[in-house]
Image 1 (tube, helix red, strand yellow):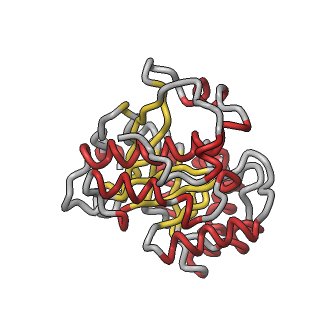
Image 2: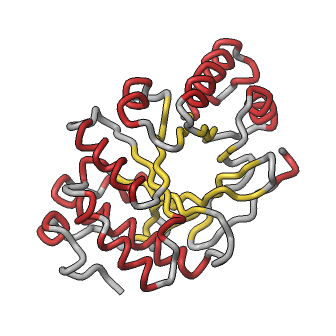
Amino acid sequence: MPVTLHDACHGCRTSAPLPLAITMAFQPIVNVTTGSVFAYEALVRGIGGEGAATVLAGVESDMIYKFDQACRVKAIELAGHLFVPDDAARLSINFMPNAVYEPDACIRASLAAARRVAFDPNRLMFEFTENERMQDVAHVRRIVEAYRARGFTTALDDFGAGYAGLGLLADLQPDMLKLDMALIRGIDGSAARRTIVAGVLQIANALDVRCIAEGVETAAELEVLRSIGIELFQGYLLARPEREALPRPDLTAA
């Protein structure tokens, strides 16, 4: 069922039509200590097989609100059919902080979708990141606080790359921190990266924030990160994204 005018906020009702019909691929975030899937991240795809870069390239500034809402709703609708009801795995959804007018208004369509497919909204995890500096950090902080008050998990994505750094961590204090692959790649051969990641983990632990290493591609990277103290991993080493399916992680590498 599509988003209704009643569910959508003003920005979604007045946005331009989306250029491509979308669907989602899913990639697991794995707890290698327990061998369980902590969450599945929903990654946008075109229904004709178009990758995320192609889809995002077609999203103009006057479509951002509708696109953000459409991605949330599609991810939740698919999760309602694919996820095991009694499983603890979360659904991780990327969202654009600058596409949210008011947290309560902009979450209505997501909650309506969850009700339609009987998906527990407490299993929702929202990842936020910005390719450009956030326009209003105080506004994003209100979004994070509102989502946490509703029982959603929040995550700062791409930490260690671009604008997602210690300043945002201090301002927003999310539940989760996703270490960007720029910090992860080749960490087994880089003393500097190992020192930086160990320092970030120490800070995160002090703030009661859990770390996820994303973009892990080799067993050597995973081994070093695990020795530092990371438990949650995402990357091609464990599983590649699959469109409209939940891939089983390969735990032999862990």
